[in-house]
Image (tube, rainbow, N blue to C red; front, side, top):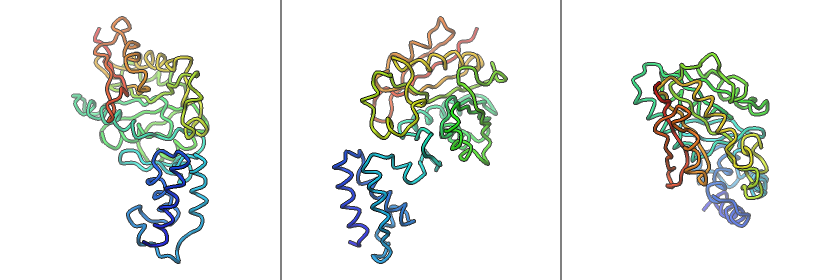
Length: 281
């Protein structure tokens, strides 16, 4: 075992003691970042090349600063995104939401599907759809000035149409023309602030986390936006907390012009996102 791997083993124990959910992965990822190698190449770093700044990075993670803030990058499906203070860090569970949406769009008999991503944050969802559905026309909106600093970096050079605005009244020029509306909105109830993990509570922007007493305020607004934007037969996909399974589909009722509202599980079998189809008049 070389020096770096020995240090990684010690760092893993420190992170585990601090309550970090994935201590070994994070210790290795930080080592790879500091030393400019891939995680699978840590054994190739010579003892003389060990960089003591590794322990500075470990200390930051030990204090529960998000791994992605320390490295400045987040991985999402096939993307590497720039992230940092002011923008919501994309989570792995959202990848299954996007996977469902990609399959649904590919199944549509539409040559150039129009997609709208509401509350885009880092741009992860919009960019993944643009990359994996090559002929799609993807539009995204974000309200926060701080988040948009990162969004603009990530979408630069892509074909995503990025705008600043409120998800509840965005894209009036696309009314009735959209095939898919997708969103990972804020959905944590204000009453649950103290139960949120430190990485999110202390570092993710509150605007991206909390939404009213029951957490569903913005999802109710997204329901109205989606109904306005979608063509008849178009789909809406909305992520929610696993504790909200069963609640969100009831927002997309037949009385409000929806059909086939349903919940879907994530890879761990927990309710993770709801979908509905805009009813045909």
